[in-house]
Amino acid sequence: MMDGNEHVENQLKKHIDDRLIQSFRDFEGHIFKKLDGQIGERMDRLIKKERKFIAYIKALENRIEKHEDEMDKHQQWIEWLGIRKTLWLLVLLFFTGINSALATVFLLWYLGWL
Image (cartoon, rainbow, N blue to C red; front, side, top):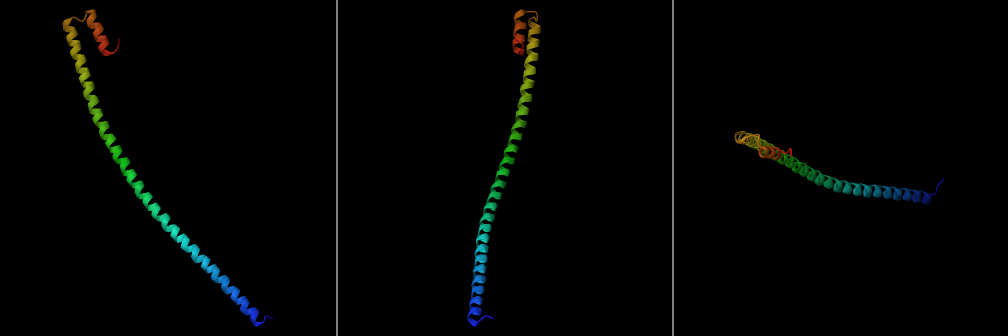
């Protein structure tokens, strides 16, 4: 059987152990809560930056598509002018004499075959 001092001593040790465990849990909770808050804030900032970056990329894609459309229009215009010039050149060569060697060489050079 325990005497009164041992019983009080055991109760005191148990109480101290319980308080230490509770203090550790409180400290651990505080640290995790603080870290979780910091991680949450950083994640929010990263998500905002990611959304801005995605919007920027989409804006660039739209600008590229717009410029590609403009380039297609310009390319069609250039091709049309090239065909028109070639037709005028053929008409000019026909009326000046297509059998002329100089005209034939010039036509081949113009068409890129020489």
